[in-house]
Image (cartoon, rainbow, N blue to C red; front, side, top):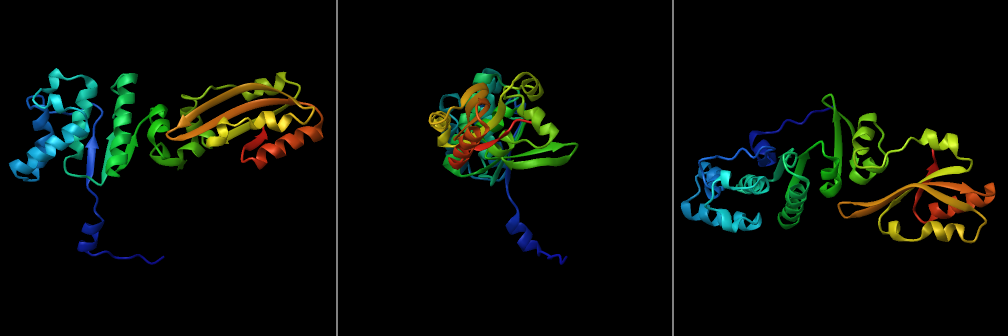
Length: 268
């Protein structure tokens, strides 16, 4: 394999500026909100006029226009994290690194911070890298996910694919935090029909595909377990179904479902 040697100028061109959002805010307790946001700008030696303009923009972006002269002790946890986000954005980073940015917050505040991050991503087009153990966070705002165990990436892919079809044991444990877990062995041992698992992805999640597939056959079905939800902007569904009827009719139903774009397989 031939290695390419990069010059110093090329390395500098590839360098990316990273803004950091911390779990426990790391704000300067004796500085106001404005001064906390302005701190990296002062290090970058921006003029007072440029600093004030940038701080005003960031206060508006994170919804803290009325809190610029307050101190961290006067703020809620969510407001403190908004200051941290504004500070991380001060120098127009290429990447926003969020290190457990919501784990110190209550669920309602977490949702508001996640909505803010999505809004920033859409407005600024900035790449965001989230480090988290909270599967709700990943499912809510991420496009891709990497699962790390023992310092190694054990699974990586689109969030929908990894959540619906986890391959590694660690991934399955994480996904079970936000999924209705069940033991397929119990179903297999207690049910007499054919057990099928169906995955829906996209707008077809809300269509009556199962009803349409069985209505012209003698097949009867029971939904034993099911989930319908969303991952960021993508709706998805998972069903475990028991089919009763003639083998040929059941195969017709399965073929029909697959033809509509559903992933269908026997429960194992």
